[in-house]
Amino acid sequence: METENILETVKEKARVWLGPGFDEETRRNVREMLEKKQDELIEAFYKDLEFGTGGLRGIMGTGTNRMNIYTVGMATQGLCNYLKLQFPGKKQIKVAIAHDSRNNSRLFAETAADIFSANGIKVYLFDSLRPTPELSFAIRHFNCQSGIVITASHNPKEFNGYKAYWDDGGQLVEPHDTNVILEVQKIKSIEEVHFTGNEELIEIIGNEVDEIYTDKIKALSINPDVIKRNKDLKIVYTPIHGTGVKLVPMALRKMGFTNIMNVPEQDIPDGNFPTVKSPNPEETAALNLAIQKAEKVNADLVMATDPDGDRVGIAVKDPDGKISLLNGNQTATLLIYYVISQLAEKKKLKGNEYICKTIVTTNLLQKIAEDYGVKNFDVLTGFKYIADIIRKKEGKMKFIGGGEESYGYLIGDFVRDKDAVISCALIAEVTAWAKDQNKSLFDILVNIYRKYGLYKESLINIVKKGKEGAEEIQKMMEKFRNDPPMKINNSEVAVIHDYLLRKTFDLRNGTEKSISLPKSNVIQFVLKDDTKISIRPSGTEPKIKFYFSVNANLAKEEDYPEVNKKLEEKLIAIQRDLGLI
Image (tube, rainbow, N blue to C red; front, side):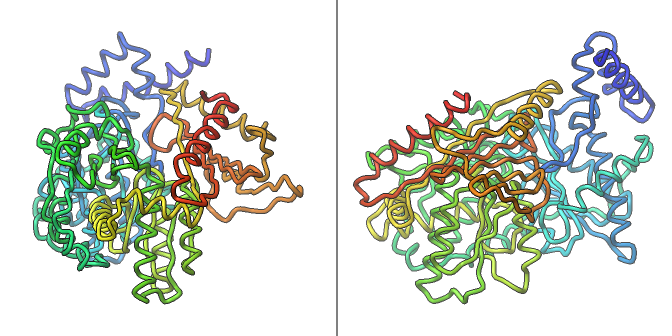
């Protein structure tokens, strides 16, 4: 009965898309789904796309639950309406627009530009694909009130998305994200969307912004003399068919690096990502071609950025001489340790500095920061929350850097989103600094572990697609929330952080206290042995994510393989105890 009710509801929604406001191809697709493909119809229309941690994101196709010019149009018109409400006295509201290499990205970007300009809003539109962080920079550079980037980040080729930003250059946070959705929901007909643009209000931007942006990145260098001595560092870089293809090599050369080797077949922007199964630098397979090249040329560093240039995966030589991928926590650790320790060495820490990390990111970052008298702020998953802290602390404290385990990092505050262009430049500098000491990045990492403890993390993603998958994920979260385990891998649960209830339960003494962060569907278990387990549904993909962190003392560097192996075995035992493997 429930399925029948849902079907009638979606049919009613779908029939609206047979109206004259939609193009003939769209109407034909809807008719076909109504007549022959009811399962597909339900998936396409059972809900509207909503802003999550990464904005609007979905599979491209026809329907309210799909990325197309109409869902992009509704979102853009809703944003226009909201901007007019928020800036009623402003003579000229301005926005910036960028896009990645995905199929339809340019079409969606130009559609949005037309709608903004049709609403009397000035548009700065990049002439071709650009990294997401450069969009954040452009918003601030042109004093815009908002901006968007068309991207689905590292999702598979079927996806595209729409990230919306506010005047600080950060992604929308409360109350703006909710309020924009409310404005979108007020639009009852596609006829309310103004698709016919005003060319006079659309300005094409490009190389001049690239130069200013990369000059600012060059100014972040802490040890330019180290780079001079190691300028021929062998760097293999791939944009994986995405937006980093121009900007990352440009930034590296401005920093002073001269030996940058590309992967020619992956330098071609292509929304089908033909050389990889998934354009996600978190996955080893995405770096295979780059690693093969690195092995041939005996490279010091391998870097790969995702399609929109905000995440970077790196690979370095391990103690056995094999080129191995570091995870996001390890790269964040190297970046934060380098920046803080070098600023301290140069007596540049004034006592009002801070870093930010997400609640599922390694606690090792906090230990490093505290050791140098730098404050750490934990935020919810999503880099927009780090940007929100930067905005709130502006003029009061100095932001050094931040990171999240999902391969996103930021150094400096002239960008307000994770930035793989900045990260690549600084990671190369850290590698040069290590080489200057006859060390590898891996050697530096082991040194950090010896000083602060060996922290080892892992992540398990369980994919549950479609409406039924979303319901299954919700049931899994409810079970962990309502019937939490009291012991995991023979270690008692000491503390439960429930970010949906915004409460921390200390099981050791039976007390509870409130959590100041915004409400979020995340549960975190901290065991008596300091193991941390976090569980949350993805905000951008049909997944439930399980994050694991264990740690142990590392007395001597030569003990690393043995201690690392024991922690690996512990992670497996925990995952097995939870029934995940």
